[in-house]
Length: 382
Image (cartoon, rainbow, N blue to C red; front, side):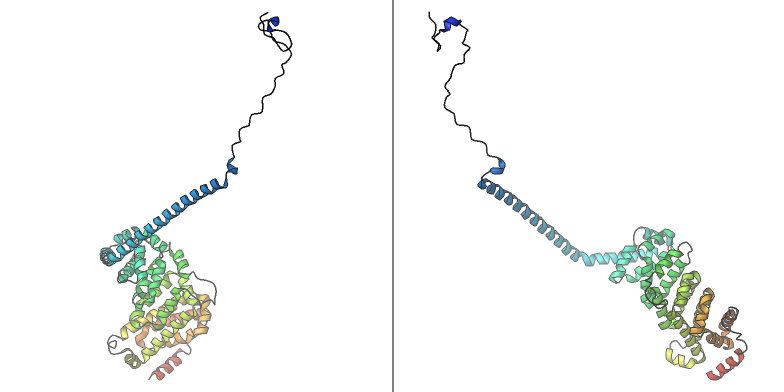
C-alpha cells in the first residue's frame, strides 16, 4: 500500500504518517569511542617543567641580588667621595668655625641678653664639642660656659639639660679655671628655686664605700684645692668655696663630713699660722718675687680659711664634737686667739668660735689657760 515496512511486519501507513510503535526498537550500540585524555593538574606537571620554572626563578633572584650589591657599592663610593671632600675642606671649616666662635665670644662677652640668645639658639652642644676635642678654641668655650648661669632661667634650664653642671666640674681639673668654675657653681646654688636640683646633680653618687671617704668629683677637686693650691690661686678658689658653703646647706654638710677636706682645711690653717710666726722660712720658700706683697694677701687668705671653718661649724653643730675630737679644733683656735695684735680680726673670729663651743658643751671654759698658752706660744716663736 505504498508504506514502508517496519520490523514488526506492519507498515508505517497502518499507523498513520505520524504514528510510531510503542515498543522500543532495539538499536545496536556503536563501538565505544575513545574518551579524551584528562588535563594534567599543576601539582603533577613533569619534572622538566618544574625544573625549568625553578631555573627561571633563581635567575630572577640572582639579578635582584646583583642589583642590591651594585647599589650598595654605589652608596659606599658616594660616602667615600663625601669623606674625601670633608677631609679636603676640614682645615677651611675649622678656621671658619674658629673665627665664628671668637666673634660670638666677643659679641656675648658683656651682654647678658646676647648670651641668653646664644644659649637658646643651641650653642651648648658646639661648646661641648670644642671641649671634647680639646681644640684651641677651648678657652673661649669655657669662659662662655662660666657666664651662662648668670643669664636667665631659660638659659640655665637648657644648660642644665645639656650637662652644664658636669662641664663646670670638669673645669676644676685645671688650676687656671678653678676659681671661675666654683664661682659659677656658687651663684647657681644661691638661686633658691634651682638649688635643690643643682645639689642633687652635684652630690649624686653611689652609696658604696665609707661615708666621707668616697665623694663626688666636686669634693675631690675641692680637697685638692685646699691641699695643694698655692696662695696665688687658693685665695679666689677658697672665697668661692666659702660662698658655696653659705648658699647651700647640703654643700656645707658634705664638706663637714668629708674627713679628707676637714684634714686639708685644718692643715692649711695650721701651716698659715706657722708661716705667720716664721716669715723668713716662708720667704725663702716662696722666692723673691712674692716677698714684696706677701703679708697682706696671706692675712686675707688665712681669714678666708678660718671663715670657711666657722661657717661649717655653725651650720653643722651636731658634727662639731666629732670635728673637735678628730682634728683638734680647740687647740688650733686657742693658738689663733692668743696671736699677736696684728691679727686682731682672726683672733676675734677664733674667740667667737670658742665661745660657741663652750655654749654647745663641746669644750670647757678656755679663757683660764688662754693667757698662759699665748705666752708659751710667743716664747716658742722667738
